[in-house]
Length: 577
Image 1 (cartoon, rainbow, N blue to C red):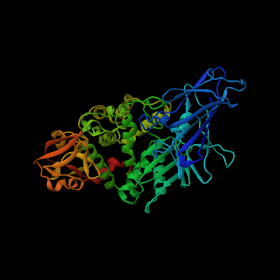
Image 2 (image 1 turned 120 degrees about the vertical axis):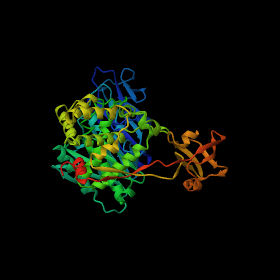
Image 3 (image 1 turned 90 degrees about the vertical axis):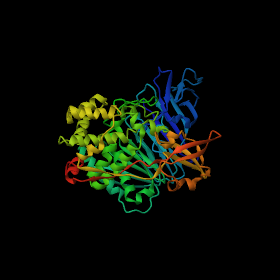
């Protein structure tokens, strides 16, 4: 089946996009089931994009209405047998049209307003169940005041004033986000391939060269893998206060970042890691992938135990690559690892949730955080990156590195481009590189909650942990403020508040009878004493309670990771030096 899509944006201030789909069914077919994806590859949560649909109409080429019925949450059936058609000529040709409300600016949703349109196509374009879509086209109609369009899609228009693009199939089509507006554009070439940069939003003055550094990232990974697996690539950047995130695509990425963070060194380093993370996904996830992540069923969860490979390995390599290409120093790289480890150490959920569990349950846990998430689960991004960090150190003892595993993974993809990976295949590659002893340790890290002695391991890489111990009072809670009122947001497992029986949602009213509002609560470390017991007055479900709490001490934190043997550390993390 070949379908022609048209996206029409007439009044951006209404946030509506009108979608028209033109096609032709086979004469023997009595109905066609159209679906709008319920989720987006790379973002593992049922987002139910059909909730933004309205004004659905199906008709023949002659303009007669066709029967259109919603049969499932995201499935809509055009039924020719149920349609009362007066004209029987060319009834197989049809147009399906509908409107989509687009007013959520994330990398996995669409956003349209007077300033621009960011079109995340799983939110907009329907597919057809049980039909392959060959060479679909998409035409974009938008206000003439918008002068820029950036996308990884192939431009097939023969007229300058018509914006017409093509793809090989439906998966490729909806894997290609589009930015339209008056955004800044730039670009560069690597290995003769065009790379486009789009910048929407405002940047504050800074001294960084985003274009040059992005090019370094592309050049480094192109050199590492030996070639570029695409014909063109687009980096779509959205800058707005508070934004952070990215989503990978086969030949593009959408990146969200807070512009104020570009003005300081640490913030800019984190931006470069984000760029590298999403760009590395061009190989790891979009090509090298878990078995369950393709071909896609857009109406059902794609549960897999291998997101620690997809995201954990990527979380290691994004920071490692920007160190290896000279964008950051070894000291800055180790500081990033310190931050990762402090986050890891502070999450009690690592005791109850393995990497396999974290991956398989991403659909109901990672993307649906709640007050107890840190106490019951661990992120496959965070722990996955740390486990591969540990694997790289273990491999270095055998004069190998994570590079050797990456080479095996990429070679396997090149030999079997249509086949995804199973856990046993990944473990076999780890064994091939590091031997059975390293495999047994690695498998324990991914499939169990056994503690990882990272400090001892890091000593083998010439690194020393410097710990910071505190004498500061600690309640073991995170709070929100409603005006001046203090509301407990979450409680640390086995911390003082947990042991005292405090709940998330409790309002702290007073301590030892003294009213406790926002300003005074923020100063509690100045007037509470460690190991003293206090009476908290709290409001819970409209009831007033008095609860005794024994104040604890702030847990020790990793102050720094220091390379006491710099040559050894460099040989582990930058083996080409």
